[in-house]
Image (tube, rainbow, N blue to C red; front, side):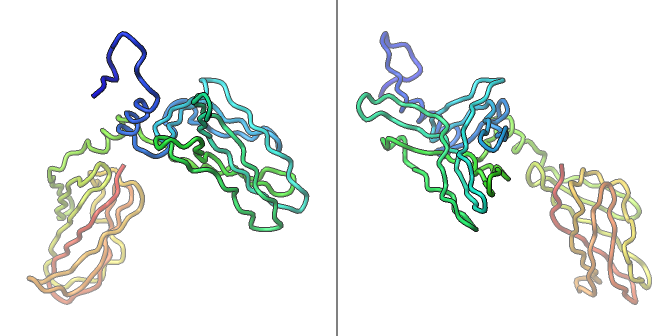
Length: 273
């Protein structure tokens, strides 16, 4: 075994070791990190795209564009009446003679076509396996005639440790909320998913409920309008169905009519902020 993060009296840390550490922490894929402007692409003209500052990790190999600067890439002119897709990649290269390594932005030009042009091929490569070239796609540049019409992101932004901690930071304890004769029980099953049940009983004949507000202070930050199913039961027998819609802090019941006393039981998972 060899020590990596330790003083040995001579240079000993290799790029391969450093990449292996990064792969173990972040993953073996290729990602843009959440720093700076995250390599945002800006179209300056039909011949220039600027890639703003940020850091990427390509199969464990890190590279950056300095803060408050950009790299300028030249896009070859399009042709009138033709379409084309160019590909912007971050290219890792190792010199076969002196073994020096580099990681730079490149534009791979696509083939013009009258319709449905294909993106050009790129070299996937495996850096840790010793390949001399490995491309990481960053953007597809869509060219229609002489104009750049769109720049499509082709990379994944990886979260930070803070983001991962947030995903694990939730209280799974079941809680109970009462309002308007309804009992709501709820518990978090992930940081943004909550399992809820709502229950109430009506005595006597039950009319159809079109979309009535049953709770105005739901104790959750509902992310968007959502529905959960409702069973209408007498004892253990299902006698009808309905739904409960969550919108903002409100819960709204819709159900069919029933000629006698009945209990409503709603259940499901909702997405919260």
